[in-house]
Length: 301
Image (cartoon, rainbow, N blue to C red; front, side, top):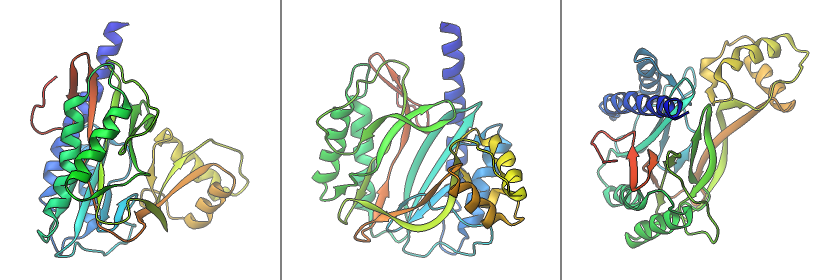
């Protein structure tokens, strides 16, 4: 049993190693004038080239966007000279996931906002150990962001990482909650502070490029059946519309969503169109600390 657990934890760590390599290379491409689609495809192919698979489509959210933004198949959008870019990457090996995000301030105007999310992540990691409560983590994140004059986004959170489940329990809040969950040794979680100069909440903006399989159900439409068979290979993890065969794709997706087979992920943006910064690492809980699987520097066990 212990050998099996160690084998699983090694897969989490190997996924983290791939993520770090891909993330550091991709950051060199986040420059004004470069296409978002080129960066997303660079990330996803880089993961596969190294023996992993994307745990979800490469998210490239800009400015007031906080999450679930990924380029479409024919997207010509480029980075602007003053964009605040969130690059959120997930890697899995055999279903065991690493998840990490960084914010790039292309115009150099929002360094304090970026630092607020990074400081919140750093402070949260410092207090993590076997027996820590998610209440304590949320409190530390909220304090670190507010001390720097910004607001945490209250309806986004960190989360657990289970096999083929990129948003598993427990929820790791970005603000102090009355009730929480105690983290235990060998739990794997993503700590994910979001800071904003806006109102502190996100809303759905309508555009959808990301989906996941909820539960297979019988469907009559031929293209919907073919699509359902195609997406089963993702084991319930999120996938991008641009990864799919294009034959009557919109109709097939709509059919599967309307029959409760698919969940969609609209882009989430800050409610007052405030700017959003994000920082995220995956950690494995240890008795007296944690191991950060997605850091380019050793942050200790």
